[in-house]
Length: 297
Image (cartoon, rainbow, N blue to C red; front, side, top):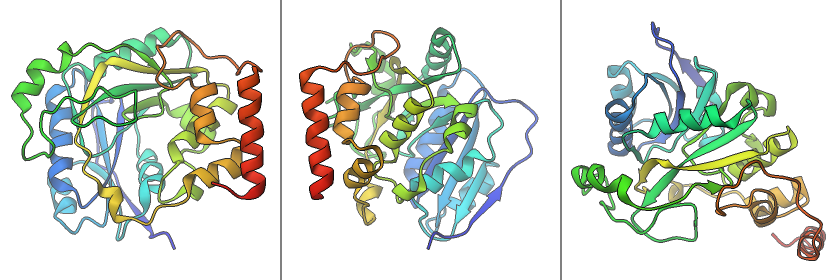
């Protein structure tokens, strides 16, 4: 059973540009670093809203001392509830979803605001770009560039001196955090789908819900950068079968969404279109149909 969530807004006098939603589960050193970087390196004023999963490591007391808006559950509610809960306290027209193990580089917010203005409508989903210390299969991240594998070993001065000198291009697909979208769109699709709790697969599911709502502008912005420590809190949870759930819900695999719909990781070239009915796309859809019928995840 999902733990009951409580809501704790703090009275505000200044309207924020972004309402930044951050779920955190007993990860206080990283959360402190993340919040500190937002406060130091943002050009504009933002509302920071934390969902505290448990908070037995001092997180709850620290957030209260910082006068931050927060929601709280006694045990881990997962990221779906961990984003949906804080979104109800948002004061901005734009929601920004963030992990708690990010360090936000200078200029991260002004770059996103410029991109929002370029989008030309309120139907968009825009991501910043992660810099990671270890190479992975994620072609949307700038890696490997090691400025510290933990918050304790993080070389902040070196990072701030070099982060904007690493060449990288804008990319297609969005999906990855930090991710900004209008609150109207978030409400329209009902936030993150809680059937994906504790959260694996909830991001591509959100992309597909946005697609069905009419969004075609999915952009990753190279000039809006965060350092991603990868603190591995997900290793503590029992994972849901995201691939199977997504396949059952949308009649296609997550990889099909990424490759044929979002053009994930390809150079950004504007608003996306419906997938072309090429032979490879049709074969992929047949493959996904077979996998669904025979029960392969």
